[in-house]
Each structure stands twice: as structure tokens, then as C-alpha cells.
Length: 469
Image (cartoon, rainbow, N blue to C red; front, side):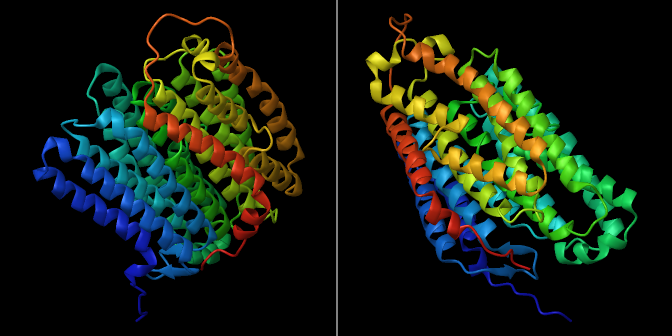
């Protein structure tokens, strides 16, 4: 009988987040409405402690190898928990004294916990459990305010998630039939001898479920409507943190479980990468609503992020490129949404007309983040894209690099459609109330994106290392 490694300290960041969520739920039951913010403070403390615990964790596996702690998990933990801190900061003012303020913080932590588990899942059963944990609280967050747009957003998000969740479960069942196991190391040993058609069917179904969480083609249908209908802090969360867990899970699945399987993993991911970046960019050209524009932008960003996933095992730079790009994207995308949260009354691109004259620092943060999403130096996304392009080229996918370069240039036009009014003379009528906490968050995220880009060399060196087995 094999002895299981069940040391909870290996999962300390996850344990801290789960404990904080449970304690926050209990506190919210008796704290007066004016002091519900204490649950948010508890959540922030759990995130900070989790980041410290993740930074000092060593490479290992937990629970009989079902959960892996390695550079992919560590980076995902730090980025997801840091991103959760940013979303908490964006939520403080809109949720102050809200009747369900503590519930929001608990749901946010549970959804982030699901993303953390996705990043470290080394077993198909843990993968589906993490998928559900990341999904169900997110559905509630999308419709948290119970207004018409939020209810529609939650319903569409739930329907697509339920459908693709069933596909994920079906794919796991098929892979279990093909490989006679759910643990990735055992699948790596068994799948090369399994029927190719059975393996391919299972992988495609699992891929559909994970791409739903990532927001990439073909699981992207929910993104524009859910993001537009959600509150801005929720939209910032939905377009950023679940993607990190899903893409890390895809990378681990391709590297650990499918490395020897007889199926065209790399060509399939390359085609989906090209489709995601192209569809996202084409749809973003005509958007006037800023949240909807950022929603299509995030679909295109998933396309770029899939490039290193496609060449896993074929290019040495794949892991570093993916992890650095994920960190840079999280900072930059959250910074762009922080500007949206700082100006809650501005919905359309034209509403930002004259912003540079009235709020130059906020307009500067918007420019840094939007041009950062394009991949303009010296932001972190620039170096992330450069590494991703290099990894794809080294993996013999030069055509994908060409498609990505064309899409990068094309994306500049719709980001400029937002930037240009902000620096135009005159302004539209209407109030320009500014949420101070969100504006400070926007400044910090923009500065951090540039700082990470400038410190890229040392950071990239930290992201290298073997996966835990």
C-alpha cells in the first residue's frame, strides 16, 4: 500500500484562502453592515500571507502527486493572489456598506481558490474539482447586483459554463478509459499505447472546458456579454485571474500527461491560438463600450498566451514565456480595468474625451496599460510577447509568429480609438466623479507593468525549472 503525502503545509496558500473564506462567511453573519469591510481586510491579509508562503515554497508534490508545487504553480499563486488583492482594492468603494458585502469577498476568494487549484492540478479528478470551484462562485459574482444586465450576464456565463463543463467531464471519462488512470504521470506512461482516436476525443473535450475558463476560441462566447453586464471589479476578475489558472492547467496537461500521446496537440493549439487572437481583434474594432472592448481584447490576448502552450516540449523558452506573459498581462489588464473602475460613469469610448486635460495621471495610466496590451516597450507584455514569439519560432511555428505579429499591429488601432478621445480637446457632458482607491490602483498597476518589463531578465531566470512529478 502506497503511503500518501498529506502535508497541508504544501498547500498553505490554498489553505489560507479557504480558511479566510470560511471565517469571512461566519463573520459576515453577525458583523453590522458598517463593519463588513473587516471581511475584506481578512481576505487581503490571507492573500498577502499566501504570496509569502508561495514565494518560499519548494518544489514537491502533495496528496499522492495529485497537486504539484513547482515554478508554474508558484508563479500562478503569486499572480492570482496579487490580482485578487487588486480586485479587492477596486471593490472597496463600490461595496461599502452593501447588504451583501461580506458575501462578495467570500465568493471572490473561492473563485480565486479554484484558479489556484487549476494551476497546480496534476490529476484529472482534481482538475474537474478545481474547474467547478473556479466556475460556480464566478457565476454568482457576474450577477451579484441582481440588476437586468447582471442577471443576463450570469445566465449566459452559466449556460456556456455548464455545457462546456459537461464536455470536460466527458473528456476526463474518455481519457480515463484510454489511459486507465487519472494521474498525469500514469497517463504519460499509458496514453502512447492507447487508441489514438479515443485519446484525441478525450483531449478535445477537456480542451474545450479549459478554454472556457481561459476565454479562448471555441469557449469564448460568454466573455463579451458577461464582462459588459458585470460590475467593473468583477469584470476585471473574470478577464484575468481564471485565465491564469486555466492556461497553467493547459500547459501542465500538455507537458505532463500528453507528452507521448499520439495526437496533434501542437497543431491543434496553434490553430486555436490563431483563431482566438484574430477573432478577438476583429470583433474589438467596432466596440464602443469600454468593458466590451476589453472583453474582446482579452480573447485576443488568450491567443498570444496559447502560443507557448502550443510548443510545450518543443521549445525551451515555452515555460518562461508563458509565466512571464501571464504576470505581465495580469498587471496590465487589471490596470486598464482600474481606470474603468475609477471613472464609473464613463461607459463608452467617447465619454473619455478630454480626460488628459482633467485627469492627466489617470489618462497616462490608461495609455500605459492599453499600449502595454499591444506589446509596447518597456512594458511587461512587450517582453512576454517577445518571449512567446521566440518560443513559437523555436518550436517550428513561424507561420503562427507571422499571424501574431499581424494581429499585434492590427490591435493598435482599436486601442488608439480609446486613447485618441482622451487626448482630444473638449469633453462630453456629464459628471467625472473619480474613485480615489481605484485611481491609485490604476497608477500602481501601470507603474508595476513598466517595472516588471524593465526587470525582465532576473524575473525570467526565476521562472525556469522542471515541473514536479
